[in-house]
Amino acid sequence: MSTKLDEKTAAQAADRAIATYEVLLEDDDKIVTHWVLGPRAQTGWHRHECDYMAIQLSHGKLLFELADGTTREIDYTPGTSLMVQAPMEHNAINIGDVDVVALEVEFKR
Image 1 (tube, rainbow, N blue to C red):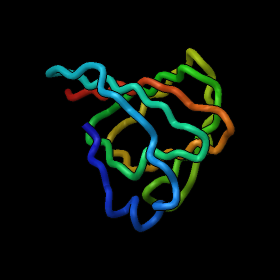
Image 2: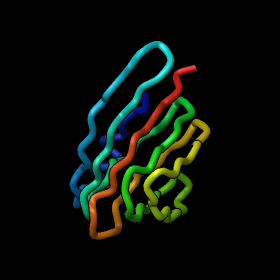
Image 3: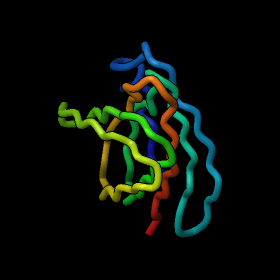
């Protein structure tokens, strides 16, 4: 599971609300999390130690802040997905005006 970096979030992004999430399933192989990022909400800084897949369930736009100081915008389209290789440290921010909804599947192996 990803590691929350609360001190980094407090230092760099304390002015934004944290998105809501719910772990739907966790077993020996994977963790499935449902995310809802309201407008201007963020995931908070965190580090993925395992590869993961994001499945987009809504329209919207996220800004990814990466550990190396770069940023990347992602336009969300329902039914699309993205595979990400670990390690990955980032913060995701909803820069649109609608909720961004996604499933995240982290692969433990």
